[in-house]
Amino acid sequence: MRLLFVCVLIQLNSLIGLSQTEENFTTDSIIYNRQIELRHDNDFLIFTDRYYTTGSYIEYRYIPKKIKSKLRKEQITIGLAHLFYTPTNILSHEITDYDRPYVGYLGLSAGSFVVRKKHATDISVAVGVTGPIAFAEGFQNLFHSSGGISTPPWEGQIKNSFHFNAYATYIKEWLLNPEPFSVYAAIQPKIAFGSKDIYIDHSAKFYFGNRNPLQESLAYNQVGATQNELFFSINFTYRYVGHNALLEGHLGGDNSEFLVPPVRELFLYGMEGCYRSRRNDIRLGYQYVSSESPLTKWHIYFTISVARRF
Image (cartoon, rainbow, N blue to C red):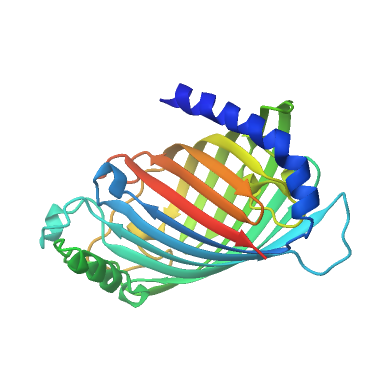
């Protein structure tokens, strides 16, 4: 299946390569410095409803009105996230049957992505709430009841709390093979610190297809002067977890009825297909996550994202 996907991608890349110059510089010469993205994560495609079961995101990106430089580009992102986490047994009202607590997270984030020719930094902060005030229970039960599905009881969910977190990512990449079928490799170490998350990531990503350089690519959600793209990526991440408030409660202490400790070492990998045409971006992918606590199992969720520049 993957071999067939690669062959189709190569053929589409050839067609895009033939028309790219004319389309981008003749019919669409306007530069769009702003973007709205809608993204949804869900595990329904493998017929599960557990752990990180749903995530919805809205993000607004723009390039500040500063002196532009060919050697440096800054992009600001403001986002809203709403996440739902449930145990495997969502039909039971007995907490003893659960392998992780129910919890919802509702948060706002803001970040600055500064990119140079072959490396970039991404610094962001997030504030949010967990517990009933995150409205995850109500939204999920509304969705389940409207679809004729049994509504989860949300017994013993993590109590209300406020969270602040900071995140820092460094990106360094290399062009291994030029067009028409480009191959990029990148490392992306990341650190998170705050009351919600404390972890360190060691990540590697590989990109295959018709992809623009770092400053212009959908791979990093870049706006401004861009060209059409069609590529897929593969990512591998090792994560060491210091604290996960969505499993063990608030860092400062939590008297919720049911909490579980996190597994300290996680492994994540996934694949994503990305397509950029004129002002529109589409991304489809999946992510595998190893067991996050001693009671849980591995998990897979899928992502769909659509964005438009203006």
